[in-house]
Image (cartoon, rainbow, N blue to C red; front, side, top):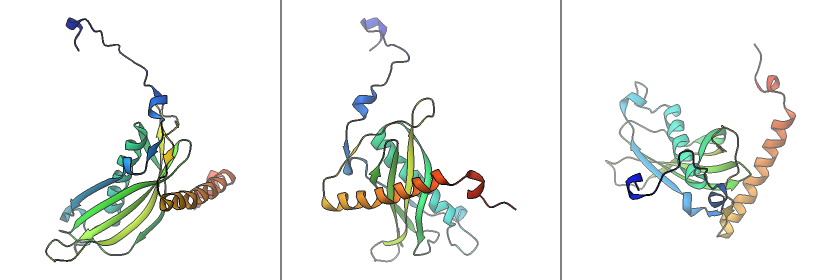
Length: 186
């Protein structure tokens, strides 16, 4: 409403983080994004660069994380990135993502990349899979609390527990490793 109608809009209104922090289901943030692979994304033989696919995976994981927490997020980690099939120019690539674990400020997203040759009457095939860990940030770029994840099925619960164990193991490893130990020195 405009100020002519008698309602004044306050600048710098605080966001109600408590309202945002209510738990959400896995289904609420599930994301599917598709695109055709172009020659500019490939090598001279027509194979799409892995980095192009990873960027697309990261973007799709970003969308899933933001749908869950409704704030800015950054990629903190990529685990178990596995390539199963090559992806070629002209093929349709579809990223499917879903939350599998949430901590205080971090969210782990399972990413599955499907590839489909539109000229052939065959179902899409799994080309890549990975887990992306995203961290929610507040307006000061500090980690901020995310909503809990409501688990509705036994499969969601089992995957949550499995990924929670991996998350905690990675966290322990990170906390004991010094930065200069993590990067090889030349």
